Image 1 (cartoon, rainbow, N blue to C red):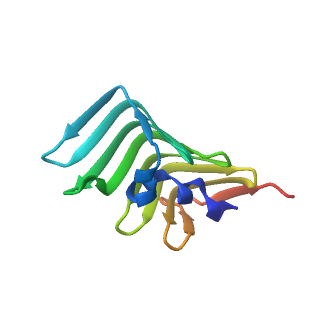
Image 2: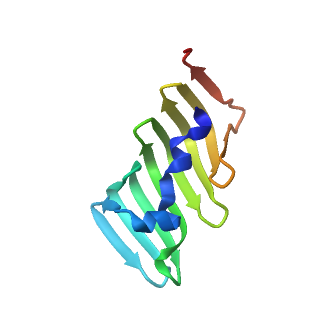
Length: 150
């Protein structure tokens, strides 16, 4: 249930070849390419629509390498971030995906909701290579979950 987080399948297939082969629609109030820093910056009401996930955030930055948009080094969404699939919703303040280690980190008041229940934590790290999702809390807080019986 929770290990199949929307995050594991989602955010950001940006770095995988499959992402490039599927239609992705990105809308924002402002889009800037900063070529010297190799950054694509989307600002204001950003919506990223992929066939399997939709991401909403006030600010999204994709850092790319010499290969351009086919060479994504990291993808970061900040502000009130929301990731949604047909089965799950996750929210937090910052989502970062790094293709080199296949880790997706969602931090800041993380809430993941699906039909099986709700989990709250300070941080969620999803290893897309191993399909292991780890919820953790910082600052004396605790991970909490409410699960629906079947």
